[in-house]
Length: 293
Image (cartoon, rainbow, N blue to C red):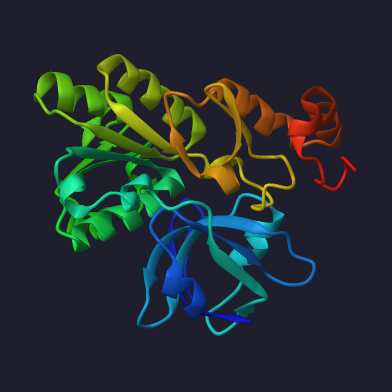
């Protein structure tokens, strides 16, 4: 059993929880995720790691209550326990494979939106701990749904806030902010890492491809089972079929077929859609989603 040590409401039905999970905390790296199961009847919920404390044996997760399972999860209180807390899963950030000297040679920009701000914080905090400063954009529709601003200020080299309605920071979306930094302020970047809603990542990648900036995205939003067996997170990445939970969750954003991924995400929500995907995708579907066997 995995005890909840802290619970905090952030904004927009988004909750932060610190969970006692020493084995996960001991070996996790930035970019990985965990699967949480509340009880025997609960669904498996994949959540990207927001922060970790190896000494305390604690993992921080952030969830948005949008469905039955996440709503049930957010109702758990401090002192209560989750039945399962499995991880670390997935591949760590590509940056973890580089030496500190190699990372310092790059100008890196993180672009965060919505709940995606939490895993961005994890990576930026880790980079700060090894002496690397990076720029960060946090984008939101309005000021009242922004999360992790103060925490990000403490670890980012430069933090840029933007809102679609102009209620806080720069008026415009994340793409507008990138254009402002690159085209108007003369900033140069070697790598962009975008984590957030699918539509945001799609348009960020379209822009950075035009600007010639290598871009990495996290495809956590399409994950369901988290083991590569359900087929929900099947992606077309260039000429290859990949699964976000076992091959990612991070991929070259310029190779991801976002339109296909978003279409599959919508289809997968219905029994009829899952059955159709199984027929269309054959052996590469991976089945075993509960209705496809």
